[in-house]
Image 1 (spheres, one colour):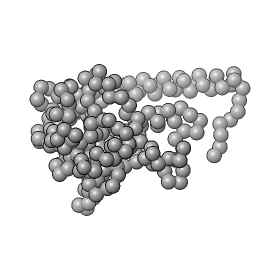
Image 2: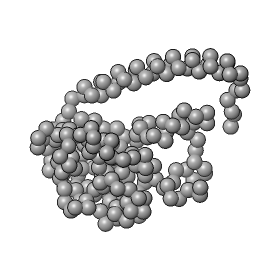
Image 3: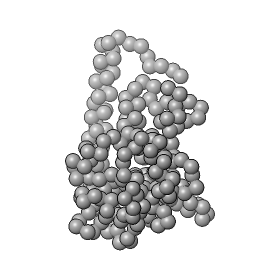
Image 4: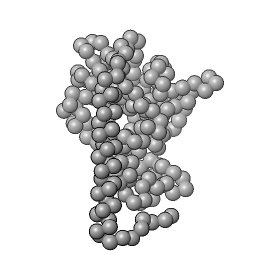
Amino acid sequence: MSLPEIVSREQWRAAREELRLREESVGRAREALGAERRRLPMVEVDPEYLFEGGDGKATLLDLFEGRSQLVVHHFMFAPEWETGCPCCAAFLDQVGHLAHLRARNTSFAVVSRAPFTRILPFKARMGWAVPWYSSSPGDFNDDFEATVRDGGTPVERPGLSCFLRERDRVFHTYSVYDADLGELGGTAALLDLTALGRRPVGSEGLRLHDEYDL
């Protein structure tokens, strides 16, 4: 792996200033894109989806916990899997304390197709306190494209979906999937600031956080 060129502090400052101007341009473009995202039209969610969580059965409206917005993390965990997806786990590790979302009238919930009896021990193993629900055997994952059918075989996709509540009406406002989700994680954003960037994690790739030999 080649390392960055070694230069004087003055040369570094000049190069950093040149890059800063480009970063500002990208930042303005990102802000404009965010404004466009907020102007997206929304779709009313008609089906009465049912989930199973720590307090029993819940509807999509229940997942809002009385707040105006809801972010759902589509965590890849198929019914036949023993554990959840390491990539999804790495993303969820970075979500942090939900108080920061809740203070902005936004709830956060994780949804997977695995039965709740399998989700619960995995959640405990990972040490997460976020609300997590099973969508099985309903169509929630299929309807929001977190599970796609490849020749009839269900294939899981990681993603986020955002919802807005107007009294008892629920609207779908935005979704993002697959590689684009990686751009939202704190670890990826921090690594992008480093000289070595997003280096591969050994020969075995990404793992659950309790499986690293640290």
